[in-house]
Image (cartoon, rainbow, N blue to C red; front, side):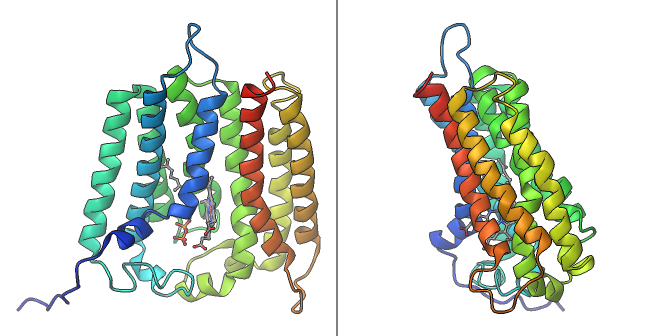
Amino acid sequence: MTAAVPLLPPADWRDFLALTKPRVMTLVVFTGLCGMLAAPAVDGRGIDPVIGFTAILCIALAAGAAGALNQWYEADIDALMRRTAKRPLPDGRMDRQSALHFGVGLGAFSVILMGLAVNLVSAAILATSILFYVLVYTVWLKRRTPQNIVIGGAAGAFPPLIGWAAATGSVALLPLLLFLLVFLWTPPHFWALALFVKTDYANAGVPMLPVVAGERVTRRQIGLYTIPMAIVAVAPWPLGLTGWFYGAVSIAMTAAFAWMAVVVATRRQQPDDAMKPEKLLFKFSILYLFGMFGALVVDRWVLA
Ligand code: HEM
Ligand SMILES: CC(C)=CCC/C(C)=C/CC/C(C)=C/COP(=O)(O)OP(=O)(O)O
């Protein structure tokens, strides 16, 4: 006898859009675009606008595919967390197979299009970032170790390299520093959030750092990761890879980030805080990357 499969109404386009995690994607795409725009002209010629647009589209589709495959794999734990329970799969608005087909199809399409229309280096890094997020982070590490986001977080750091490689066909020191910036930014970004959604992760049995090691250790780790992040953030300017504008913006924004991280690192949670410092740091972390990558492009295009 076969088990009865519940019949679901067909998912609509909004459900497919939700699978792509569109809000996170905006920052992923922005860092990719800025990586592309920060790249130098090759043989006196910048990237063709149509090819540039195609490359950004491929980054967006790949990030969407990665988000869909993440939700396909995690429907069980998403159902246990308040923040994620209303997603299309745990909420029963879509079946898992549709999410899998959508993710695999979109991911394959984005990599093939990047390879055919842009170049093989950017396509290879794009494929690596999808596989890293889905296999290394989601399948392998997320449920096993509180270091999941430190290692798995590399997935979200690839887009500046992809954008640069799309424009030049190669990688260089500046995009490698941008990769490192996002890589080192991820732990403070995520652990600040994890501090205030800790019970969600505990309920779902996901071993995030505040659940496993406690709040004090998490606060200290946020402070510790901010130190190398700050050095890498400002480094492109003294290394002569950017102009004064990036230097000024990176110093100001990184100082603000570091100050908030120190407050989070040194303070115990106050139950009556109107705006918890960790919430502020999480929100600012997003503004921070937008500001830093935006400054890079202004530096290169407006003030050069
Ligand atoms: C392993 C690494 C990362 C983890 C675990 C993580 C986790 C999260 C989580 C759980 C949220 C809350 C989303 C929600 O409310 O549903 C969030 C928000 C966000 N993340 Fe991350 N993140 C990571 C890396 C990144 C990267 C690399 C970027 C972009 C470069 C990014 C950009 C954002 C943005 C823009 C938001 C706000 C979305 C909104 O407004 O709802 N994150 N992140
Ligand atoms: C170009 C390309 C393929 C980029 C893909 C990388 C990418 C989408 C990075 C963002 C990382 C992210 C949204 C983590 C969320 O963690 P989570 O999945 O644990 O969050 P959740 O609990 O909200 O599902």
